[in-house]
Length: 287
Ligand SMILES: [Fe+2]
Image 1 (tube, rainbow, N blue to C red):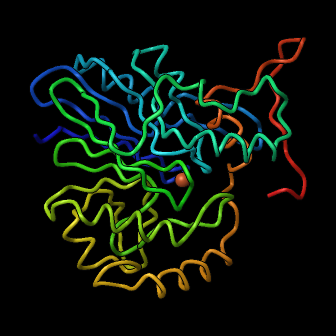
Image 2 (tube, rainbow, N blue to C red; image 1 turned 90 degrees about the horizontal axis):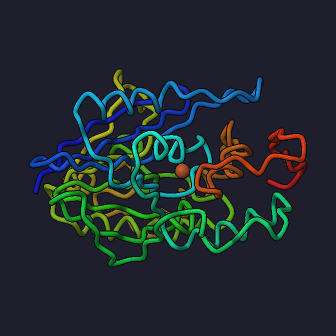
């Protein structure tokens, strides 16, 4: 089956959120939503999420799932905000528990921060399948960028999160805690084993040098032939060497500190203090 897919590009974080529709009904899923956050003022905004809500309402869609490909380090998830407005279950990979354990330590969270993934409605593992109306979705565990990364294969489309980017840009970084370039290579092979005509929807786009427009849709065949990091049969050894060398030069994403604290809680802010105020922490010399 061929889902109808609409991408929403967030300029501030180069993220693409997707609405994935059953072509024969009202059912849909929302993949990797964004809650706008201005770090310098500490203010959130719902402009990006409200655009998705408006689209869902205009098209009279029934949101069944709010899917996260992983715990994002560069934007906050709007999943709880969308859930309040539209319904749907929030899903992520079950290895989220590893991510919660790692960042629970980084942010020195107390025991009230559960490391069992219970903040999410559904924890997926490799081989799981579920439905969006009549559409069947299959779950691939594709770690490397983070330990919990998933690819959702919905009909003829694959939502690969931060594994592969557009062919001219390559692949995602693997240097966050728990990341592994070796694992990412193996995960990419899993995605490239899908049929060549499978449509691939990427989690970010930054325009490769020489490209004028943002883009987020490609195919397995195109990735195999042209991906600058893993295409044309690039070897694992060469990939790992290139990826690790490149990652050593990259700065941390601007919003990594707020993003991790919120996204490891399924998009919720940390609990308010006794005066009802909400704070995020900045760990010094930890990341
Ligand atoms: Fe990411």
